[in-house]
Image (cartoon, rainbow over the protein chains, first blue to last red):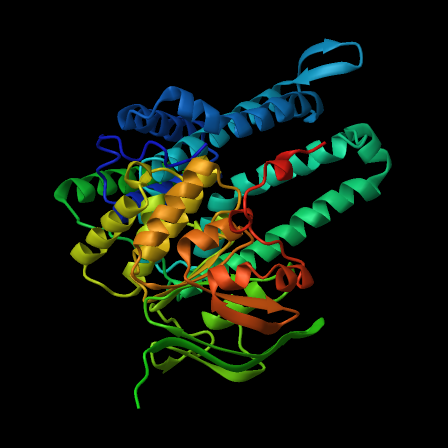
Length: 249
Length: 250
């Protein structure tokens, strides 16, 4: 699955200049993650959902990306509901569901999903090369950009490699249970994957140097600011400021 | 006096920190536009030689000249390109188009020229429909051809190809042969596929244990059964008179 698989669609979110989009959405992501006020939180959730709808990204694609945070929420919700303490909502013997736990779990779920939706709007509606260029424009450290870029490009390959190694190990009697008991074989697989990825990173770097890489990621894309970009950005920045103000009251 | 040699290696020596004398006194000269095969058993130093020729590694001693200029290790030299054995190493961008334009953009060419070169390179290898695809979604053969396009778009004078037919099916192998035969650039091709070299090269260099053992016309050299056997190589079938009994596996 590629994050920017649908970056070629046409929508007001897609046509938004990547630099302005980053300038508007990055603060909103931070606000969404840090906000405590329930109304502010609902506001971020509403904006992020509306943006995904406006972007016309296929729902199946969005749900696929949300799968990871969704599993996290599924695991965390019962833990928080049963362990947070405070006023009981219901009780079955020694097991109690706490009101505060339910509230924290709901807040966590809304926060995680809202932030992820904004993240999808930011990186799913712009080609990765353009997003990189926009981050470069805001002087993000090149080393961080390179890390982001290569993680995105090679993560699939390493999962594929890991899958192949596990298959080869399974054919010789390796099982997850046995692997947990005899950690040596599991560690060996991980170390091999690490060494292979290190060696490959050296070869990739050599290939990049041969093509003139000096730390920047060149692209044919040219940024062009339009009035609509400024308006969209101003609107979202004002909203971010308003939510922060609301939270501070 | 100016000579017609586009690629020259003089007394190259190289050692890895954990392996000494990987290359010993390697010398050769290659004329402009020549297609030269590089053969030798596993571990004979072929890939290391390529890494030295394109300036990724620095020789312990010796000198490499490409296009009349000394190859300085670590310096960007768009006149010499190297096709890695694994296309995964060469395709590092999110799409094939980004990869094909990566080199020309770093050469600071005008936008129109970059687009023209990318389109031409993709067309040359038959990968135009794959331009917007992600590398990890391509088949092995498609990846190999796309990797080829990434170096063709730079229009180098010298191209080093490391096992260009490995893991290719017969159709894709034939595609690669056809592309190479049409190329006017100077090519050095390292391969264990000797039949492929017979179809694409006129000359060959035999390397073993870090030394150049022999160089000369490919048919003549690969026909020397004694020489080939003594360096763990096999005379290609096409150079052996056909005998039905040779296909009888009883």
